[in-house]
Image 1 (cartoon, rainbow, N blue to C red):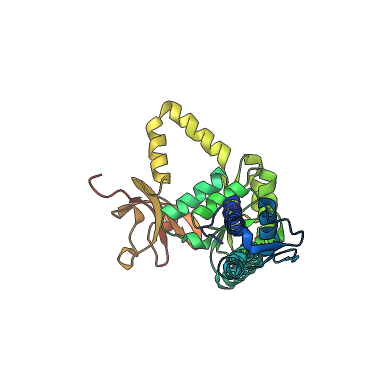
Image 2 (image 1 turned 120 degrees about the vertical axis):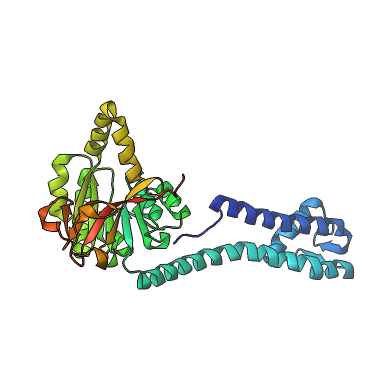
Length: 331
């Protein structure tokens, strides 16, 4: 679960510093008041004896070979050494208790989250493609960061995802127990974006088995693997290498076209492709005659081009794919 925390090394150094400070103060207090302490050897209390006494006293070992003999030394032990002993114990014992408490708290938070989360998005693979998919979802303001779960085995990628407020799950998306932890069985959509096509096939197959009704979109590098991912249960497949290759080819002759496509694919600048339901006043009319630039019509979960005869007359329940202006007027 996302939260702000100190680096483990930083936390350990801070605790160790407090413990050493308590030990140093105790050594100083005992050494300055060494005339009030009695050693069983009767040879006086040296600096080494003060360090020894402070160590065994703060650790509550207390062998009794060096003891406060005068009233002043005993009073200093009550008012100074005893509180320092408590600080010393809190630092070390508290660290162990905190670790156990933190684990229990995380388990409780995960269980609470899993009992409440519904219709969320699971992103398997937070590389370049997975991170771009999350950017698009957050840019459209259609997704809450707390309802996006990232599954990856790379700690650095999970750290970056957690810094954005996303829920993260450590592990391979090919394993059923990892996907169950991410709540795939209750997810609305699953984004499969690993670096390898064979991994994409296995992740899709596993996710479809756990979530028969979820929408699964997957990315592959090679066209020859598209049918394998579709057979594994993907509803939509994006070929990343060929799509990038087409844009590169178009950029050599018509770079302006590429700029327009990039503008449409960027959800928070310029123009963007959006989807909306047909308004009641638009029912019966042609999508080509609307004020919006309509690219397609979704009817009964099937996409039709705007010039298709089947959607020449809009019906109630249709959804329009259109070009939406995102940048405010005048910019």
